[in-house]
Image 1 (spheres, rainbow over the protein chains, first blue to last red):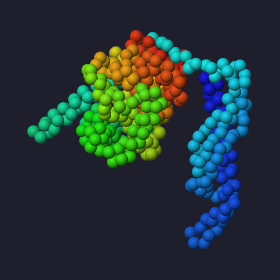
Image 2: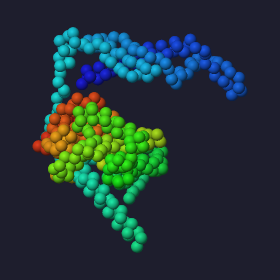
Image 3: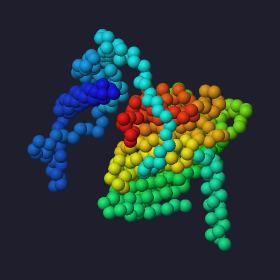
Image 4: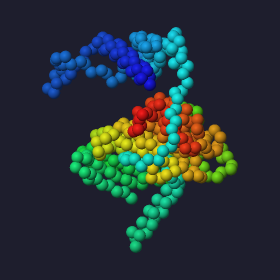
Length: 158
Length: 276
């Protein structure tokens, strides 16, 4: 379980690394176009003072496949590639799959994890809510509700 | 048929707005434990739930789903939400190998004939989906400690009125005032599918017969709508559904079998109150 968490954490790090790559690419494109001006309330335009960065445009025309750095994991290297279309990530793929070591092969060939089995208990525990299937069918419940509402209407008009 | 109260707990216990109304044929409860949430936010929650009922209910002749099924409404004329839900249902059908299927009847009558033009019934997703929508209304109003519970499909976040993560009891399949186990969560969707009494079953879409051997499946994960569909599908799979659930990413499962044992996936251990 811990390995799976570690794998997910590394995958996140790698995807973030790739995103940084993509955004860096986007900013390169921005710098080559005309600089952004911020208009002051007085009506005159002026570039922002200080260290504020220009806003990222709402849409981007960045497209392509970006591969992240190869990250060494306990049982082999992992590399993630993202497919970007029009500035949006459309696909994420694992590029390298560690199959060169026997332990990795064992992990790959692992069947679905074992289920925990226990005997059904009947507890009267302190809970905030219950989650369960209903004891009566929805049809019955609706019919009963409709009948009650009709009865209430009758009572109200008399 | 509603009741709304601001529950006064013992000193030291937090705010608690509780409301219960019958919609979609079941009691739907909303509990909000943020002190600054107004009653009108909860009004909007129930307006949303009644909209879902009016639009999707197969028990209402004039719902869009019913009219769609009778051919009185074309798909292109339906509310965008209807098309969005049906598209999602189709993705789930593929993902669950057809065990979640809007064309399969959810409840059996004693039908011996096969009806080839079965109407669609998306209620295996709609219930959880309506809860997710209700939670979003609360979230947009700033709520961070709440529970929306629609007949066993629930979305919970944060802590309950006593400052602890929400404690959820899984209904015992045969003893009404008992629970099979207790789960604890502070950011999750939970859904249970099943049938405890005879004559009411979810149909296995592959065989057309009621699925046997499983009393209930409870799924816990980030989205209550997905949990609802997974629970419906896993229940229809019968006892092998537990193994399918073990392969789910981000969703945990507890399966109560008819023989009186309980199977749970490794992912469920983080939610167990009685973790070993």
